[in-house]
Image 1 (cartoon, chains in turn orange, blue, purple, yellow):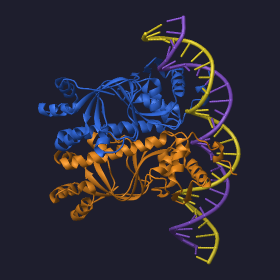
Image 2 (tube, rainbow over the protein chains, first blue to last red):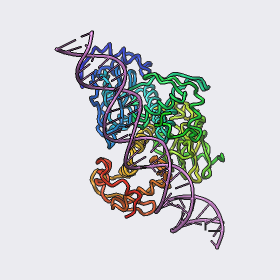
Image 3 (cartoon, chains in turn brown, red, green, yellow):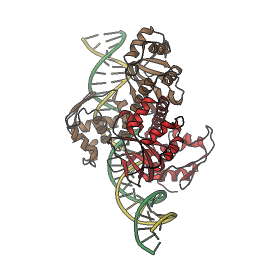
Image 4 (cartoon, rainbow over the protein chains, first blue to last red):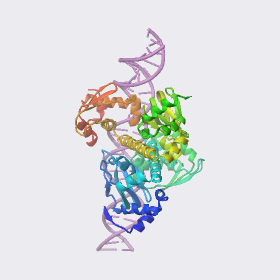
Amino acid sequence: MNGKFLPLSHMQDTLGRMSCFKTWRKEQLALLASGARNVVVEKNVPLVRKGRRVDSLYVVLSGQMRLFIPLPNGMERVVALMGAGDSFGESCLVLEEPCPYDIVAGKKTHLLSIDGLIFRQELHTNHAYAECILEQVCRRLMETLRDTEICAQRLSIHKVATFLLQFRTGAGGEGFEVRLPARKRDIAARLGISQETFSRTLGFMNKQGLIHVEGGLIRVRDAHTLAAINATDCQHTPAEHQDVS
Amino acid sequence: MNGKFLPLSHMQDTLGRMSCFKTWRKEQLALLASGARNVVVEKNVPLVRKGRRVDSLYVVLSGQMRLFIPLPNGMERVVALMGAGDSFGESCLVLEEPCPYDIVAGKKTHLLSIDGLIFRQELHTNHAYAECILEQVCRRLMETLRDTEICAQRLSIHKVATFLLQFRTGAGGEGFEVRLPARKRDIAARLGISQETFSRTLGFMNKQGLIHVEGGLIRVRDAHTLAAINATDCQHTPAEHQDVS
DNA sequence: CGTGTCGTTGAGCGCTTTCAACCCTGGTGG
DNA sequence: CCACCAGGGTTGAAAGCGCTCAACGACACG
């Protein structure tokens, strides 16, 4: 976790491009940037551990951070994957509560670290900023609830189907493409299944003609057919997951 | 869902007692109350269905509302249980997104329904209110993440242990009491297990001397022993759940 | 005393996990 | 140029935990 100071102008540029800071005046950005540090986290290095205090707001410049809950058996339950432009730490700072998950770099990642005191002060002063953060936290809540819905499914097919349907473009039954936003093992951990089961389920759906798997790119043939899977009470022979015809 | 108009003064009193409205001036409360309706929902009657628009903010006066995600097999994944003084609908109104869960009355429930437009307007005008709602949404997010942690556990005994430890008073290893906030089947649905498994797991922990079950009242003997359960890699014989010595 | 709700207990099945080996790709250095 | 290695992903076989369905018991209520 190397702290390095970069030119303020560059930071202001970076921040100015983010939705939450679009409406900010120049002097506000300067104030914010004055409390910001540039942080580099190497792959698999933890930034914050579960239960520890969070002292600042983080913005991802490049790379990917993995937010996950560590499980007793050494596995992880991935809560979120943060890419360039995403920020995290807001809710912990607002409530002054310890971090409910581990935060580790999935690969070498550049972050902007904004001092928590300045964040809270700005929240209290700048109404537009508060509204923006409120929206952001609401979005995080909705995402978490979508994950909850996925993980609540009991069959892995239902989980994967629900997961894929999140990327559906139109409301119709057309096909669409999904590029997995992370390693398959991390996606599996987000769905609450093992990577083996994820691989098997994808293979099964592929064999059934529901989807076409090509590495990290998945083409869904028909959205309706996929949606019908978790609506109906599972007509397919369950054992087919492992059996090879 | 009967709409009935009550005296404004009574509503103002009710609202004034809630934390979010403590700082409000009288005329603000009057404005809010003018857009509020008193709603009664009978037991097992749905208020909002998953995917439908939410048009107002709801405050529970008495009774209990159950927020849950319906599952393919007819089961429910309980997301939250709202009692007197709780409010819900904020995040949907802020984002203008459809409701991500079903909302049904667990028993006959009295609600205050505050018009969504007035809510949003007040949010945009009243900075203190926006801050308060932000805190509330952050708390909801944290609660949801705690539920995520529980449901991520693989073994039911880990789920129940983690659930019970949420009610721990001190950080030490003393015992403490837990009064279940709802029917056992709803608690089970919140933990992501069937009511049968919940019953069996409680019975198992009872027999082991870890806890003492007395209807909806659970006495935890020692917090440390309970915490040690999901830390260690499950030394107890798994079959003991069902076997009776 | 019948009825409905809630909770408990029992037996069997099945999906997922676990552990294992194997394949594939990309990077590296001799 | 090729052998070697590491990381990620796939496939196989066995075992376990929770679900399902069913019956029973406790309790409140009319």
